[in-house]
Image (cartoon, rainbow, N blue to C red; front, side, top):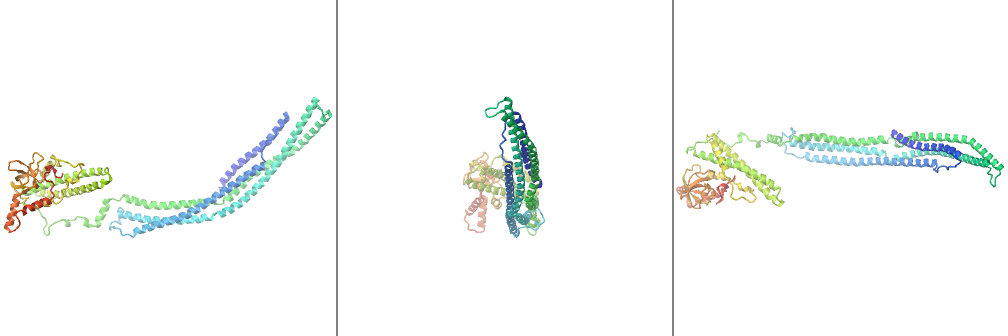
Length: 602
């Protein structure tokens, strides 16, 4: 602060010295004008300028005003620091306590944590616990910071406005006293300058008049009121005045120069010694206190931020390691009910292993099962692929339809997802059956290859598509058809040919399909090229593929009638037909009456 005051005082001193240099230049210019006037006989009026004392007094008033303004700014700064620290302390305390209350609410809760979560930092609950503890720790750090701000407000109060005003009053008195002394010196300088200037002007006047008289004597220009004697007398008088002024001039000029040097020395002492000392006393230890106050405020904030950063940096790193696989592993370690162990597999009691037995028909029924489940596995794979394609189209469509239709699209997407899930489950079950049949020695792979070729030959879609082309219900056939197929009487052991009756009419859509009418009797001669299709021959000798579900085996109805007669049952003769029709309708057939063979689910 002292260096700054000295620099400011030095700049002001240089400006004042420039003014003093102007005085010296005026003093030298006076001699120059005197010499020029003596040579030309012309009188030059002195420049009109204000008194030096008035200029200095105005400059001193500016200094007083500037110091008072600086003192006012310093006092306002201290008051702002005090008010800010007081309010910030209250805010930090309230914020810290609020964080602690928030953390305490979650610490008291019983999370569904397992035994393995506490020791693994990659657990979601371990990271969450770290966030809660970090929140409480941050709250305590904020409470500590509030104490720092509170002490800062107390320290700023010590440097109050009243103490600064008392110091300002004392310093202003000293400054005004120093300025008054310097002003007296300037007044004395003004007095000496005035005396010197008056003597200089009088000497110039006498010199000009003497020169005029001498010129008139040489020209004998006595005019009307002067004689030669009177002119000689005037010449002698002016010569005596010039001699007298010449004697006085040396003393007056020396006194003026000495006073000028003395005033300059006093002015330099004022700017270099007195004024910096007064300003230093006025500031006191203000800037040391300000440095401490600002350092305390900055340090409190930095410490709070560092505590929060260090704690939550580790939390952020731990959160980056969180993954579903790790959390699922920890969950399964604590909940063994979700893990499939050998003891949980379905097995008959008292039997170590159940295997397939060779049927009496020479393996025809097992071949039938292999063909059947190969078709089912192929169909499930195709359904899953088709469902995923439809789901992608529905997802793209969802962003394009209006908001009113979005709910319908969402519902369709849920249906498609459910169908995909059913297809995955069905394929897993079918593959398990095929694996068992493969171990029994059946050529399952050939049936799978044939099913794949059959599924890829013709598009199995309805002849007329929905307007949108995205009907997810067109492959919804996953229900109890498996139960129906297994419960069908004599289906596995059926031999060809056998007679059946058409219960639903069907119009063939392909060259290899046979058109049938309701009530018509057919002779089924062999299995069809696809599941639930058989090759039949009508009475006209025409052969083609027809839907197996549209036919009612007369041999099955006859066997049931014979069984009812042998047991003495009183069930009407049409009960067997009605029961099979009900079974067919309950199975939710893939095809509706009159629908083409290719309309089964993909």
